[in-house]
Image 1 (cartoon, protein in one colour):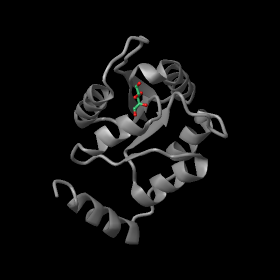
Image 2 (cartoon, rainbow, N blue to C red; image 1 turned 60 degrees about the vertical axis):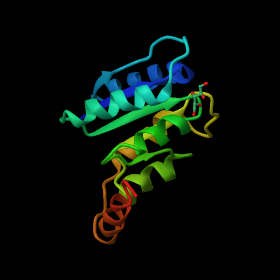
Image 3 (tube, rainbow, N blue to C red; image 1 turned 135 degrees about the horizontal axis):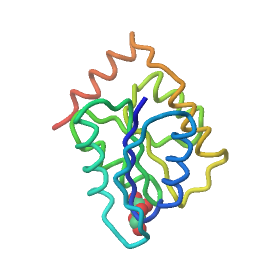
Image 4 (cartoon, rainbow, N blue to C red; image 1 turned 30 degrees about the vertical axis):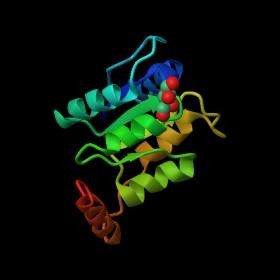
Length: 146
Ligand code: RB5
């Protein structure tokens, strides 16, 4: 498995944690920064990650900002992206099973009720169910550009 990771200045420490977690699981990582606390703009990092993801060979992407909100909204503006912002491991599992999310976002300034690594694992270990969910995803993606 391989993942692309990017974040703004609001989630530098959490991005490091995520990368370490993925590496421990044997998942390949390509990290696009920022690795500095200096202020940057989260849409730039969402764009970098999605452009890299589109080069192919990736199973998913991880995006992080202070809340996870700005960077996930930005990614979701780009064609073909379904970036989930799960609050816990239940939501992370379900977004793979039902939404077939290809990106997952987290907030570096958010207090999660469980370790982010567990939330990430729930996403990684789940599989898309297809069937009626594919029909809904087709409808969702048809909304792009409207
Ligand atoms: C940056 O200060 C902050 O706005 C950003 O990290 C994020 O939380 C936006 O949604």
